[in-house]
Length: 69
Image (cartoon, rainbow, N blue to C red; front, side, top):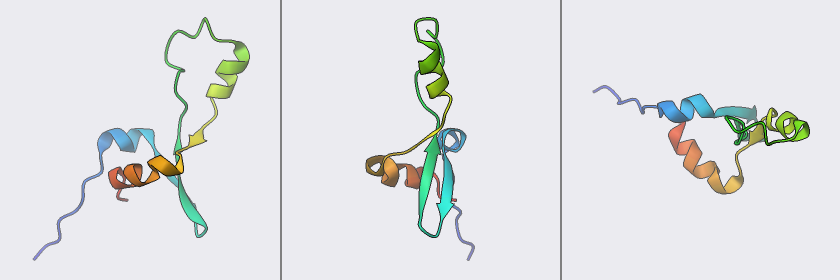
């Protein structure tokens, strides 16, 4: 009998990436508020929004369920 593969959520696949190794897995994400209305934001703010961030521990369990790989 064949095993059924768990499907990855396509929306999560596009937004999150697993990183890390033996010490623990983290999930990398991009920052919000960088799509539009950028003229009202300072140069410093826009520069800081370019950098990636990590998903908080509170949300980690939920996101891990969306990314079974």
